Image (cartoon, rainbow, N blue to C red):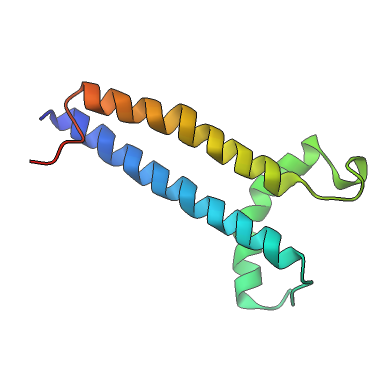
Length: 105
């Protein structure tokens, strides 16, 4: 087993977990937005703070006033996460395996 292969494999796994976690955070924010949540609620504040920087940038590409009043920025964020998981994570995983990482003793 290669030391660098294992390091790359570990970083790939951590990145995959972070992307999965962010997917669920964005999904929770999108679902909560349908029920008109209390903006003073701690969970709503956390979800807003965690997702707003990304969603704000995506709203510049497709502002709600151009999409019939529907905010599709969470959909774009989820598609980007899926793209990163398939394009980046799988390639990093294959590179780690090529270096001899990712195998348990």
